[in-house]
Image 1 (spheres, rainbow, N blue to C red):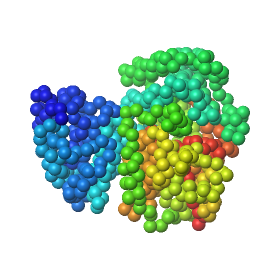
Image 2 (image 1 turned 90 degrees about the horizontal axis):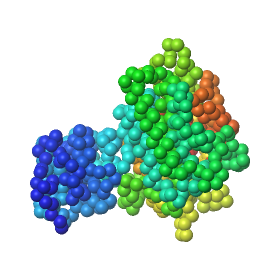
Image 3 (image 1 turned 90 degrees about the vertical axis):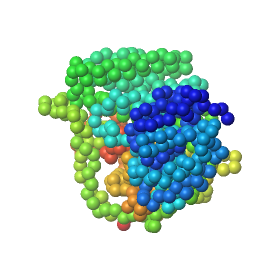
Image 4 (image 1 turned 45 degrees about the vertical axis):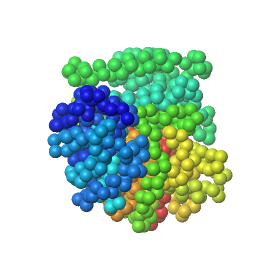
Length: 610
């Protein structure tokens, strides 16, 4: 074993939280950090994590205590089976003091990891699992794996500092004008997907035939921002030709691809498309233009108003939508072209699968009864009033949204019974075996010996993903629901269920790229009053996407909603594992897809008439 030099971390232990080692090089020989549970402190972890490069193999291991009934004995056994390269046995560790706490790093001479286990008897602040995930997210850390104690009173987390992350919404807002940092977070995610997951040979390929080639979307995002920014500021587009070819994508009818809304006319040959480097140069200029606008607003050179605020909210969220759109396209080529997310550890599928099987607890009853009740749909945000006197300058505290979210209105919901959890891959597979003529859900792959489930890391065995929600079209899931004596919910019914039982990003739900895959649903357990997560998917409703009383179409993005009031698109609610927290955290958000379009990450929940 190579021993650290005299200048290494081993000879400069911490004595306070303010004198953490000064550079990443201090940590270069250490891959694993064992932290005392008393170091679950946002400020300490923020300072500590910044000493690590993003996307490296470094790991932090920390126990988090959820109740007073904590014992450290189980950690000794849990350590032996931790995945992700966390092998602690047979190694020596050096203790570093931090106030009255400590952490351990690997060294060539020192103590065994039993000394760290002893330190873990200091319980520290009691923290729920959701609170721990929020602490990690707020400082750019991510849980790769969490091993719970037998009594459930604590969890041993293995953390990484991934290449991108999103903070909880208490640091941002799902409604207001986005901050510069929100833009930087979304740009980091967009660049990771477009530049880190699409190899150059795929730029001119279509992972889904009903959508454009990959290169289009790399040009579309900065073009859309540039065009809406120019319009809001009464300025010119930065690149008029890009406005011609990249303004708007396509969503043709599944059953008649020749029928499509107004869209950009794109080049017909690969050679006629702009080069990637040209597009990226344009992207950088547009981002610079946006940041200059923020500087002008901060200095008072330009005054913000409703029109500018709406443009900023809409363009940021538009980029968030397209992160997910591009990902559900790319997953069709994962393992045969698409690269896995860089800067994230490959999920330890075997360990996760075993944990999901072992911890799988079914609700005491499969359904819950809701209604009758009156609920509020939407919020009040009429774009048509943005230039009205007395309104145009009211930006602070205003709730911006898309045109189909407004206005607020009261909706009656009758009594019904709802399944606690969405239809799983395992359930759908058992039904599908006798109905193979309906076709294979595109979220599945028919392997040589078994059905596999697509992930962004490549297909995994159905046995790994059996508890995840199945992802396919409304038509397929509706047939399944009918065979079980039920149906898919209306929009008001699903809205009521999600309002009542979905915990959201702050409650630990699998959204905001906490993972790059679904997880098993957790709703329906008595311990949390039935509240939990659906596993990280949108959910279909039987409600056609259409106009409503008081609807005012957007002028910033003409046709955003009205082009799809066609009787073919259905409302979907919720959020997927790749939905940015700003969108996932807004209950008024309404997504929409064609009922026979099977590619998006949308599952289904059965409801029954009462």
